[in-house]
Image (cartoon, rainbow, N blue to C red):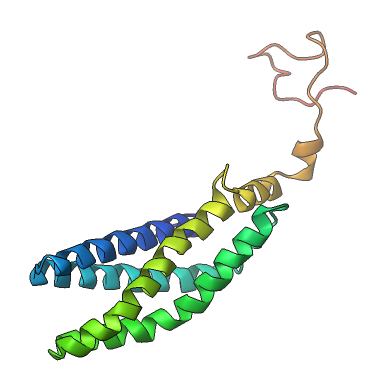
Length: 183
């Protein structure tokens, strides 16, 4: 079983995989490598589908991660998140329709719709990775990871003071090493 804490990273990897496969698929079709194009786009579709299942699972179990960043990064983050979310809602029907046209052999209509689907899907995949970086990885942000780590430390441990002198601290291996200090 995959730990819930790993899902954001897995989601970012799936988004990055989708972006790479979409880019390779575009290059392949420009070079008239139809089979390679088909494989890349189907791979991107699978990666995005697995992402969607993982994302829904993560949010159903954990809920929404708030962005506590401050300063200039806050409006940047919400601008990216807003456009990402709006386009992400459009991608499933666009991708399914575009793929359906290709599978039915309607290549002229497929190509016309793909001119809209590809950039939107690529943008969503790339900005999904950017949102992840802003939330979980310094220096981009790492706010959620820091907040989650500090929430795990019990108050008694966080407020405990280390011994101030060598005479107050027990020697390693002595019976008092694990005992509380007399204060």
